[in-house]
Length: 340
Picture 1 (tube, rainbow, N blue to C red):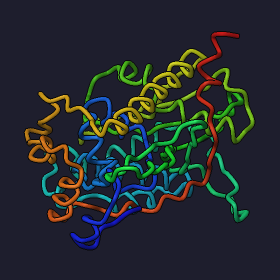
Picture 2: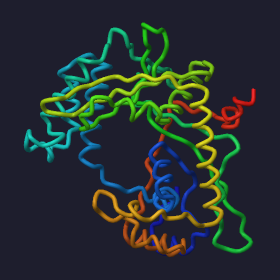
Picture 3: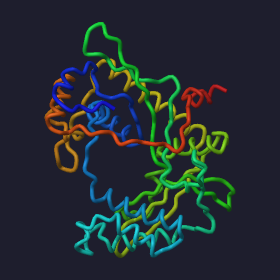
Picture 4: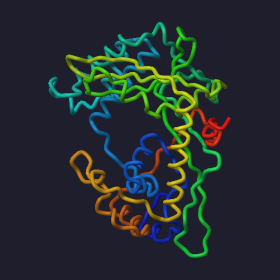
């Protein structure tokens, strides 16, 4: 990954974007769908810096505590793990949303309402022969037939070809002893107190690639996939946790593959044009604040953008990502199912 140490490094760089690989994920594709220009700044200009919100950090703390319980079955240790990860600057008042008290109560609900007798934690053997629990399982999907051509800023210089991958972490994989099948679970934390949360997730495609990864590990066909969402409602007095389970059919898989083909094709097309459109309007304001790229959005001179980001100290080295599981996927194999 290209990291500039001086303005001279920027001046001597010959390509439109300072990257050697493009890692996509569910969240980055959501960014691309909402505003391709914001995606360009974040992923192609290598500018992923952001501050985690209190909501995100509280969610992480609950993940830590609940997942630790599934491994060790020790409630006190799970509470300790959650408290270590909790953003204590937010926990001054028990009346605030996502207070420490609220997170504690919610963790207890998550532990008490998850049927550990029915759902057994799955394990995988890593490359060193170690037995590893399928919690926060890092994976990578390599798309066959897709790579990104980065244009040169100099005439008569060939484009640089870089790989496109899809990466992520699977929150949890369990074996359902009642149905005798594996279940991929994504853990969601929210302050939404709606009684029926299923409509938010039934048609979500987030878990589709997770299940594709698990099925390939188990050498199972992709004719149907079972996914679950464990929804934890954070509250000091009304905390609750419920598991919603759905079947992903061949049609769901085909739709995900088609959406992925469209996204990849558009990213490749915009890159070749050196132009990612800005959707404008509400996408320019997030949480009552201007988009962090607002003042640069009008500038389509890539060299100038790289210099501005460098002088602002905005460039960030991408953290190493070491997938425990890597699979190769031919999207056309999924989209052609309806032709059989």
